[in-house]
Length: 148
Image (tube, rainbow, N blue to C red; front, side):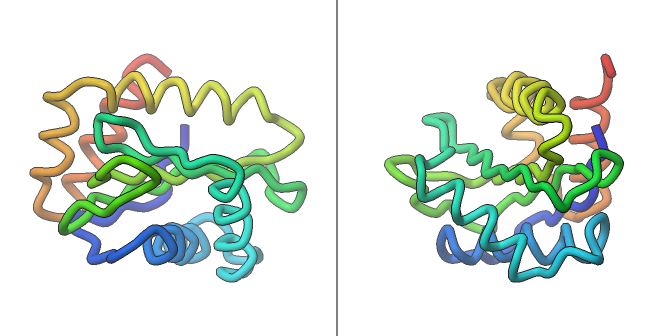
C-alpha cells in the first residue's frame, strides 16, 4: 500500500478539520490533479453515511472516486495533538484512504490491513508517541507493509 503522507501531532479541532488536512496532504503528494476541495467533499460524503471511528480511538475515513487512477490510490495518516470526538468515540489517530472505483477490492484490503495494525494497543501508543512526520511515516509504513 502506498502511504502518501503523514502528520505527527496535527492540530485538528474537529472532523471537518481532520478531513481537510487529509485532503490537503493527499493533494500535495499523490493527487495533485484532484482538487483539495473535491477530496474533502469525497471524504465528507462518506462520513455522512456513517462515522468511521472505532472504540480504540482510530478513524478510518475513506473515499473511492472514478477520477483516481489505481496507481494514485494511497493513504494519509495523522496523529492528533489532542483527541477529538468522531461520532461517539474520542479519536487521536486518523487514517485517510483514497482509492479508485476500478479497484474497490484494494480499498477493502487496505482498510483491513490498517484496522489490524491499529487494533493493537502497543501500535497505537507508538504511533501517538511519534514526535515527527518522518518517524510516523516510517513506523506506519513498516507495520502496514511488512507482509505486502
